[in-house]
Image (cartoon, rainbow, N blue to C red):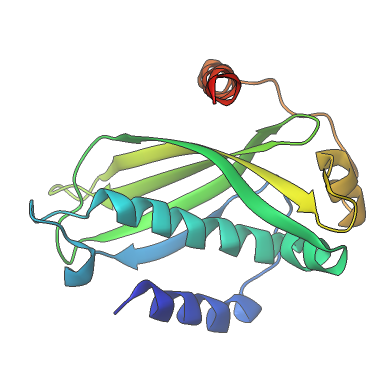
Length: 182
């Protein structure tokens, strides 16, 4: 089963899932298939990014964010991603992908994506986690759309972002330094 089929299944199931607020997270349940495995017989690194894409899409649809964005001709863009691999996910192992909005500034939103598998004892294990910086770009106005404008267009009261955690500060700083160096 390819990611295209997983995308199709996601699209078909989203209308039956409850709507969530932007501050809530969403969870998707997955399984490592043979097409997800590399030569080390565990889920290949690139699949984590692909599953994160599907997870962010699910979050954007369930919050109404994607509908609002397309209505306003804004396009979601991933600007940066940092992933930390902790434990391997083996063939046929079930896992879940948890995605949530963690913080935002003027134009960027930081999402956290966590990949959680089951250990031999049945306990949850963190297989990988990532922080991802996303923006919305207005093709019409040729600008990055402020997050407060996006939230207002969704009907969500623009709120102050939570206090950034040390890992978010470090991620944002490293991303800014890379942007300057390019």
